Length: 264
Image (cartoon, rainbow, N blue to C red; front, side):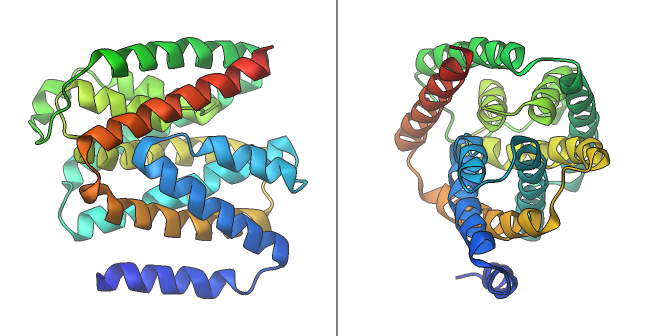
C-alpha cells in the first residue's frame, strides 16, 4: 500500500478516535458515503438521511455535507497530483469555474423551494439515466484534449451550481459529462473530484455565513470522507468498465426514487 495513503488514513483515524460515539458514527457514515460517491456519485443518498437519523437538523446536515465533501475532494486532488495523474493547469481552471458555480447555486437555493429543486433534480436524473443507458460503449483510454473544452465551461459551471445549491446526483452528472467528451471512466472520476471540491468550497463559503456549521459534526464527517475517498481512488483502477456502468445506473435509479418520494 502506498505510503501517502497510509499516512493520510493513520492521521484521520487518530483524529477520529478523539470524538464521541456520535462523531464516530459520523466518521463511519462519511467513509461509506465518500467511497460510493467517489466511484459513481450519490454519496448524498447516505449522508443527509443518516445525519438526520442521528438527530442533526437538515440545514446543519447540508452545510456539514458540503464541508466534508469538499475536504474529501481536496484530499483526492493531493493524491492525484502526487501521483501525476492530473495536470495542475486543468485543476486550476475547473476549480475556479466550480467555485463560482457553487457560490451561485448556494445563493439561488435561498430563493427556491425544496420541492422545486426536487422536480429539477428528477428531470435531470431521468435525462442522465437515458444518456447512460443509450451510451453502450465507454472509453477505456482518455482522448485528453483540453482545448476542445475551453469554450464549454458553462456545463461544469451549471453542474457546480446544482451541487452548491442542492446536490443529489451532481457527481454522477459530472462523470457523465466527462464520459460524453471521450474521457475514460477513471479520468472522468478524477476530474469530478476536482469539480466537486470547487463547488463545495463555493457553497461552504455561503453556508458558513448562515451559522449552520457545527464543527464537531463537520470534522468527524470530513475524517470519514477523507478515508472513503482515498479508498475509492485506490479501488478505481481495478473496477471493470461494465461494473462501473452498472454501479452508475444503480446510483441514478436510487437517486430518482429518493427525489420522487420527496416530490410526492
